[in-house]
Length: 89
Image (cartoon, rainbow, N blue to C red; front, side, top):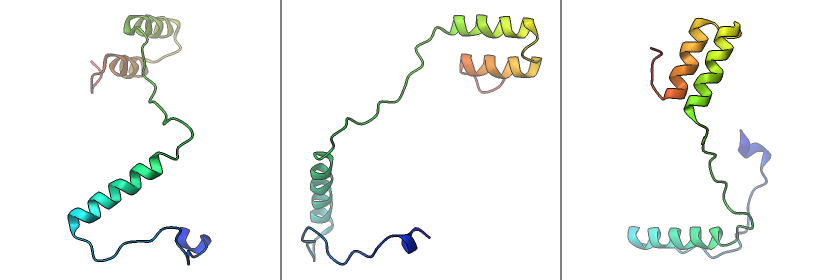
C-alpha cells in the first residue's frame, strides 16, 4: 500500500520519449541509468568478506564445545558453516 502514502507525480523533470523501438528503449534506459549513477555522492557499499582463518574459527568452536557453551548439534552446525559444507558431518 505504498502508493497511498506517496504523493502523485504530476510533472517529470525530463521529457520521456514516446514511440521507440525495443533497442532504442534499452539504449535510453541505459543512458538514464548511467546519468543517475553519475549523481552518486557515496561509493556503493562493498560486501564484507570474511578473511578470518578457518582454523582459528574451528579452534574457538572446539574450545566453546569443550567448555559446554555449545551443544553437539550447535557445534556440528557451526563447524559445517565454517567449513562451507551444506550438512553437519
